[in-house]
Length: 153
Ligand code: 4NP
Image 1 (cartoon, rainbow, N blue to C red):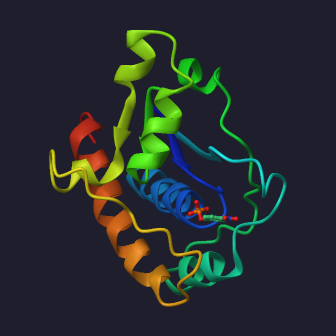
Image 2 (cartoon, helix red, strand yellow):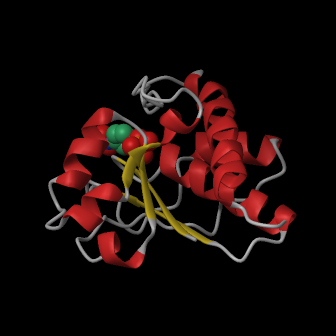
């Protein structure tokens, strides 16, 4: 399983999602890969936001080695699951898809927790207090992704 986490800037939400999923992959001994990307290019090459780094660290997860990159059309071939944080990300990702197979890989991450509710992981960039809530939402969603796709672990 190759999973790509996608948000707008690739500095707040999707780096947390990548870090949480990598933590679960390692803890479960799964032969999976995870990466993250942003639909926008503003922060390419940057470390995650210091508030995401701090929130992850409080939960024992180090995301300091991540660097932001922009989503590319080729990602829709390289990954099996492309998980969007909100409906704007979802639409922007689908805008790069050219085949039904690519479109079918794109899902809203919170639908693993609350199916068909199309709930957003709120963008915490402008809200210093939002990062812990984002962490908890992504922790729940990543747990459900592991439960759904792990085989024989
Ligand atoms: P993210 O948050 O999409 O969770 O990484 C944002 C980061 C930066 C900006 C917006 C959202 N920005 O406008 O620069």
